[in-house]
Length: 405
Image (tube, rainbow, N blue to C red; front, side, top):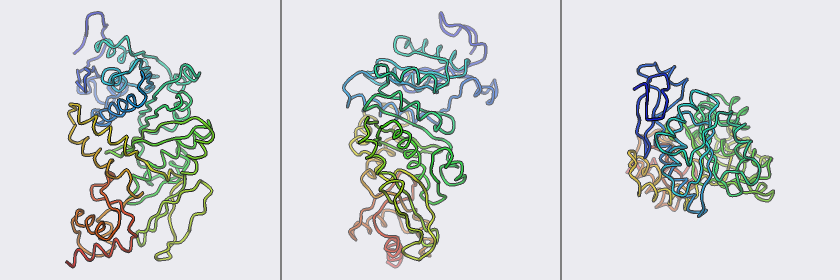
């Protein structure tokens, strides 16, 4: 498709294709004609992130209902405009969405997409660096109810500006796709970007979420802000967090007390989350086998899900007609189930490797743990993962008992 797109909308000068997502129609550069590299340089559109955007729409709707007022939203890394347009079109109670991009070609395309969706009365498109755009709105009366940071790679450069542009009680939504640093492949990169050491382990994806939350918490603390995580998930190639922001030194101090470390013994599989602040004492040796412990952090050691919020988002998705609804419901049911569960998780094949036995079913392991008085639930972080407060030694013995029976 090229030339005149819609009456009154000028040609973009390159071939585009039409995409339908949620309730909007979107024009994106045609990668089959232009080549993927050229198309992405104009404006990056990732159809694999539709699930993320569906959940984001649902989270914003639930958040809007809790406020019971109109929302003003910022999405300063917009590319094609898809996320901001979906907020404007699909979230009831949205008054204004400010979207922006530093790339002039992306801005031109985003303006076209605003026009063809008849959203010019709600959506403002700006050409600006993301931090510069957010800094325009730091005055108390101009701040946003919600800011969505969805970059290609690390969100670290944008967190401070996002926090400064939020109102008290505002919602920050953040995506990180730089999983190798967050999962311990490049721990020094994680230290630089997120201020904490990552850990290569079978529970690395939860560590990734907690490192991102810690980076937000510590940046918020500089501004006397506290954080209240509402919903966090790992999906495919990214982690995504939603957190409410609270103003005040008392709130910031309370959040800092939820920082801590994860310790892990690669020899026997022991792991533990230690909270109480960055300066808390952390053991060096495993209490089970005496091996030297590995450490991740500082990271967020508090809860990463709010059960009521997760439940309401689940209901919101149930009421909608998303194409990926079944996948989204499966994810949200797991988030709901693990919201009040123990931190960190074990992966069954790793446990069975330590126990030197074949794998029983995960359902049998969870049932056996519960019958022995332990908390146990599946986790969305890994299809073979289990969250439990059972010590590693007891978990291994239960797996062995199941194989003997």
